Length: 266
Image (cartoon, rainbow, N blue to C red; front, side, top):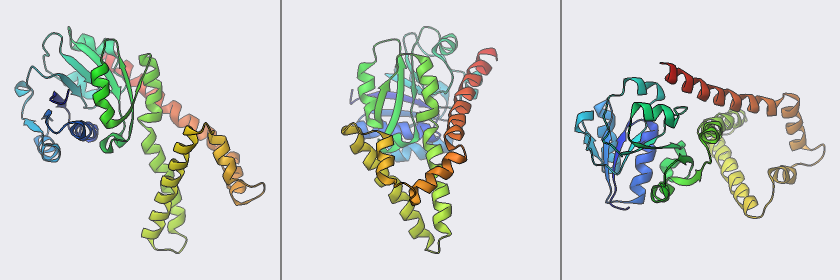
């Protein structure tokens, strides 16, 4: 499917990430880009060699797939009639296939929850479809790894991990940087130390996964009883770090379910 024809409806951060990933899969595939703000679709077209679609009416009706990458709340005002049997991939968090099928009858709909590392082909992408989409899933592999979910419920719950996860990791990294930046070293050096610490730790996690080594074991390899790292971990424990993170994930999942109900009841 190197000569694909795909319509991207929404050219924000996620639309850009998906377009970059798909372009890395094929230099000959056609990407038709629509966004209410024309400047966004024009800028993205320059990056990925895409074709700017100035209005929804001008979007080709014979695309292999249409990818909805706008905000879930914008679905209510989205006006476009897809031809029967058109294939639609939705990345709208919390919007289930039932709701999308009511909005776009007689179409085939799949869901994807990508994350921003997809723009560098390093995403953790959750996919769900009720019809055979194996060829398209292979193509989505250009975004990173694709995990096929058994149900929409799984996809909605794990959105808190893969979809929101990068932002939580970046926020965690900020706390590292804030401390390092107050240590007296140059700010750029502080940033490089933090980035390399995260990069190296992820590489260790990759090796551990290959060798069936748990995260607990990795942590314990760094920790000596009554040592420096031990005290840091004890501080995190006494400040209920595990509960704080659990609450964050549950809050994200709760918001996913709220979005689903808001759109269903609108």
